[in-house]
Length: 403
Image 1 (cartoon, helix red, strand yellow):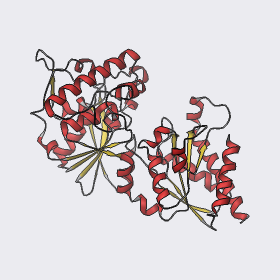
Image 2 (cartoon, one colour):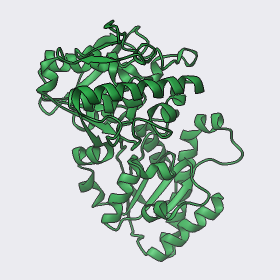
Image 3 (cartoon, helix red, strand yellow):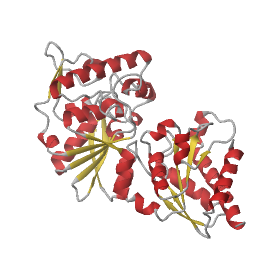
Image 4 (cartoon, one colour):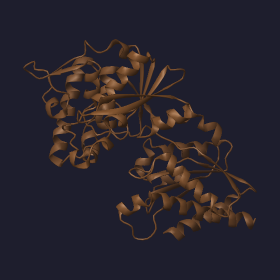
């Protein structure tokens, strides 16, 4: 397949007549999940081009769409000030977590994975019935009360939780009760019995702030494509636990609807981070926004892409889900607006890409070579990215020489 794809690259280059004496290549990958963060992926691609025969100039612009690492990239781009405190981890053990102050201290960038991330617990400890997002709420509260920020930006990727945001909300003052009036611990195992919610003690600074949640998936809260069924297994839930989690989220949604008249089940992006986006929308007034659109606007990406000849983007897998708010689709779509060819590079690409995918990616390149298991592929992602970029650079150089 690799030879066929390289042949397609060569054909596109030859027919497009876009080769210049000194190409400007914009390298803008998302993270390669479970392997490389976006910056390391960009650096591997850059190294590959530098080792090729292509005379080019590269700009590294790693991107994020709300997934784990997005707020770190925003912190770097916006020259933020890091604040580190001790908060509750996803299973209640204390962890050190950070947030970033940007825009003259008026905005806090908070990565949910720092306080409530799946990377904070061992695989054998993963249990979304017991895990909650309280630590993320503690970060929010600290930023609001101690630093008086006016805006909270939440990146929700990489969480260990399917708690509908109840842990966060509990830290912010919301309380949950069963039918007998007994207060419930904010974990799904207990919250499946929720019958009443009291938000009267919700911290007033929350109501006076602007909370934006960066979303990278379009999943709704409930059902076969909802938070429990899609994301529960990724966080360690068994089939039986997935049913309990979906039942809990359905019960939570029904109770919240009675209290707030906001329908958690219908809000777009509501399934993000195990339903945390929906819970924060309904009970804390958070806005759910397209993560990559926000990222590109805040970092001035559009001004950079105007100056480039080729865009190289990618992530672990490019498929139909990529079109539902993922970072590579966001930058590829923008490239189309300026007539810039875009190459999507991934560990896995479809054998027969849909027309929708091919509408925004001019070429798709898989980076894996030979018969590799998934475990081997994850270990070798950096080297495979380097090798792919080097081969692509050599193809571009050959075409440049013969024009």
